[in-house]
Amino acid sequence: MARDITLRLYNTLTRTKEVFQPLDPANVRMYVCGPTVYDRAHIGNARPAIVFDVLFRLLRLVYGEAAVTYVRNITDVDDKINARAAERGISIRELTETTLADYCEDVAGLQCLPPTHQPRATEHIDDMKAMIEGLVEAGHAYVAEGHVLFNVPSLADYGGLSGRPMKEMIAGARVEVAPYKKDPADFVLWKPSSEGEPGWPSPCGIEGMGRPGWHIECSAMADRFLWEALEDRLSEAAREHPHQFDIHGGGIDLVFPHHENEVAQSRACFHSDRMASVWMHNGFLQVEGEKMSKSLGNFITIRDLLSTDAFGGRTWPGEVLRLAMLGTDYRQPIDWTVRALEEAEANLLRWKRRIGDDVSEGTPDAQVVAALADDLNTPKAIARLHEIAKSIGDDSRRDRDAARTLSASLLLLGFDLGFAAAAQEAPPVPEAEIAEMIEARAAARGARDFAEADRIRDSLAERGILLKDGKDPETGQPKTTWEVAR
Image (cartoon, rainbow, N blue to C red):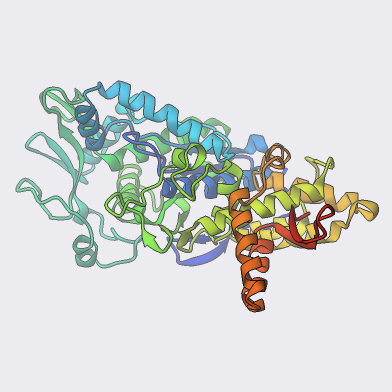
């Protein structure tokens, strides 16, 4: 039974924040676009994984774990995959298997729960072909030179998701120009495969082997797992909306053309007014104020952060990456910085010390839940965590109930509290850097530049390191020591 919590989610389709009302509260259904497995996932790919993991956890809290189905697909047939496999001189299967395993390991390292289903595109070719043939039969698609294309003008209200005029959408996208298209906006549902490329018997009477276009993959897999597999379990009210589900998510870059084309295919195939009730999109990510790109040398993978010193000269625990990501509202652009990671790590350590042994899977704080229920307002939820931590007090007068509430709230947000216990062995700032800053502060004080000395002290305090000025017991000379903030 659903808890008495009202969820409000921003819907890209309507451009408003709406009260979330699932088609069937006993079967809440969500689809999120997953990776194309040709290369390691970068930190931008981590954002939807984390954002929709938080939503998955919140939905399970509100409606019950068994009531929520979360599907995140894997695209394992794509031109980028073909090119990368050829570049590396390995088989396509070897590339996709290895890259998929890497992706699953990386997002698990970010403390993301596995989705209910993680279908691979190559396992659902027949579902895609069935949709394609249905679209041709209904007059929404046509065969041309071994291709099957969706006829965009056949759907009068195409463009409702992105909300832009057709000319503007085409101008802003890389639309393939081809003489066999009836309209420049028409997009590929199926295309022929050359020798050495993945291929399956083509639909619609086309001779030879071919493979699906990108957009049809998600439409087919969403329908398979969120309608066909669940239809018998759905309420009568939900069955009045065939082939529809509750939430579709992904990055803001997918709104057009990918999600717009998903909507068109699914609506045209199933003669429905909607594909998903709510469309949610996370914002872009940049690194230290610049767009992430290999040409700028700031292209960072999740694995780089978890296991190398490629960013900030050290590795970072997955929970630190998670907290840094959640510090910005999911719909806003995020600037990925070393400073943000350092602050996130200091906060996690501080919270863990406040919790101590009072780790609880009990009831999370009502204000934290309320913040998340308001369109995943994670910055507000984190601000509340700070308030709870401050209320716990010192060891002699600890509020153990508050400690348990803090613990349960962190668990709701997806933080493995075992991390902080292990991380206590290392300070949130490298010891060599602390020593350098203490030396610089001493030099500033010697030059009577007390403003600079205070700035250095405050900077370390913000990062979880407290300085203590005293005397060396052996020499009697002034000495500054440090400790991790508690």
